[in-house]
Image (cartoon, rainbow, N blue to C red; front, side, top):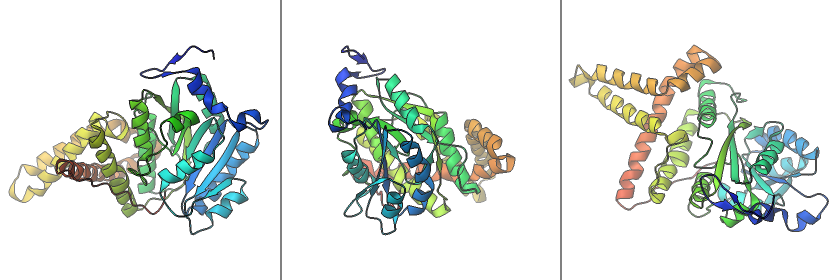
Length: 368
C-alpha cells in the first residue's frame, strides 16, 4: 500500500497509518511477529475450552503469526489450568467483571495486528485464522469482520438446534455491509479497536458490548463486513429457562435500550422490518386468542395472524425443513412465536421506561 488514503466504502477514509500502525511496536521488530491475537474471555467454562482450544492452538502452532490469549474472568473452576495445558497464554482477572472488561484486558495484552474475539463455547473452523488475515489484508478499507455459527451445533435437541440454526440463518442471510459487530467469532484491526476505546465496560459490561462497539464503529465511518464463510461450531446446550432469560435480559432489553439511547432503527439481522412486523402480528394473534371466549371471530383472526407470520418467515422455515426435516420445522414454529412474543414484550417494556426517563438494562448472567 502506498501513502494515498484508501476510501472506505460507506464511510471514513482509512489511511496508510490506520492500517499499518498496528504492525509497529515490539512485535514488528521481532522475528516472531504476530498477525492475529485470538482473545477468549472465560468464566467457569473449562469443559468448553477443552473442546475448542486443542484445534485452535494446533492451528496457531503451524505458523508464527498467531497467539491465543485466554482471559480468566474470576472463574472458580479450572478454566485457567485447562487453558495453560493446551498452550494458551492466560491473563487472570482479580474478580469477575463481565465480558467487556475481560475482552479489553485481553486486547491490552495482545501483540497481534488483528484481534480475533472468540467465545469460550465455540470451536472455530480450520482455516479461520488464515481467512481473517487474508480478508483484512485484501480489504484495507474494512475495520472489522465477523462470521456466524455453522449449521451443525454439537448438541442435538429441538431447542438447542432451533436456537443455533436461527443464528446461522440470520447471519448467513444478513447484509454484508453490517451495522453491528459480533464477538462470537469476529476480528477487528487492533489500532482501530484502540482508537475507539475498546468495549464499553460501564454501559454494557455483561451483554451486547459487541453490538454497541459496532454502532460506534459505523458512526465513526468505519466499515464492518459480515463474512458468511467465517464460521464456528457452537458447543452449548440450551434449556428453555436459560434461552428466554438470556434473550430477554442479555439481548432484547439492552439492545432496545441501545437503539433508543442512540436514536437508531436498524434494518438488519434480528431487527429487520419483517422481524418487527412479525413481532407485532404475533402480539395481535395472542391478544385475539385471549378474546376467544367472547368473540367467535377471534379464532379466525388469531389463525390469520399466525399464518401471516409464518409467511413472512417462510425462508427461515424452509431452511429448517431442509436442514432437519419437516417435523423439526413444524416444532420450530411455536418456539419462533414465543421468541417474537417475548421480544415484543421486552421492546414495549423498554419503550415505556424510555418515555418515563428510566433505564432498565439488566445484563446479569451466569456465564458467557
